[in-house]
Image (cartoon, rainbow, N blue to C red; front, side, top):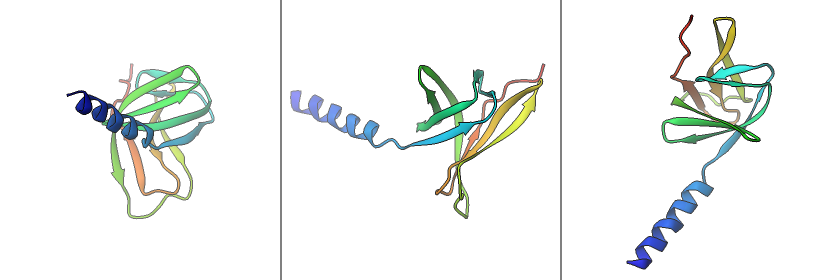
Length: 110
């Protein structure tokens, strides 16, 4: 029984350690879900059906859909929409991959 518990924790630790993160630069404040992010550098990782954006003590977890494209993105880029005068992150294209993160939770317009 103890072996199974130790093995489960070891597998969980490996899974967490192998979670890849990507660096994303926001050049102006933007909303990720309901969290307002300041301009700056963020680490983005995927946790199930959520994207986790981290910078220092700030963390935002937002529902996303991960899509693959036919060609690789040359660099990481962020696509925005504007709602209520505020920028809202719509997509993140991950440089060097064919991966596009589509944010599924949008802040409703006032």
